[in-house]
Amino acid sequence: MKNLLRPMLVLFVVLTVVTGVVYPAVVTALGQAAFSHRANGSLIERGGKVIGSEIIGQQFDAPGYFWGRLSATTPNPYNAGSSSGSNLGPTNPALADEVKARIAALHDADPGNGAAVPVDLVTSSGSGLDPDISPAAAAYQVARVAKARGVSTSQVEALVARATTGRQFGLLGEPRVNVLKLNLALDGDGGAAP
Image (cartoon, rainbow, N blue to C red; front, side, top):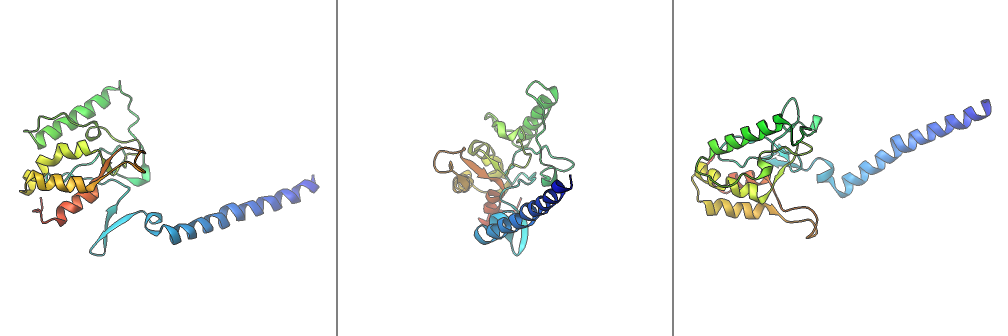
């Protein structure tokens, strides 16, 4: 038994150092050297102050801003420390109630909009942190945002078109619009603050 104990302890220490110290240090160094912006959370700064991340959604409620997907994280929306979906199945009445409430809120915010509400505006993502919406969800909100800011819909549509990212490598994923970047573009294009 003593013959086995020493090699086991040596192997334990070696693997602990390699996998617990050396590997994380090398990966961190490579990440900082090659992908510093992404390795540090893809943070967006304005005036030297961090205002958000490209990869984590934020809450926008004002009529003059585009609204993102719902967040199911607790205790606060878009809480990166508790990323999760709602886990409500399609036959769960709580999900149906949540969707109806969100549709009602969207209709209350823009009563003249008779278009079908895109699904990503009434459901949360699997992570609860999705920073993007579909181009259809952005198009649904154009009239409300333009009216709240006192600008033409064509100006807002142009910003949406510029903020739309296509499929990765032309075939992976779906076209999407980053809500934070779009709202920053709205603020930077001289639109009146909501």
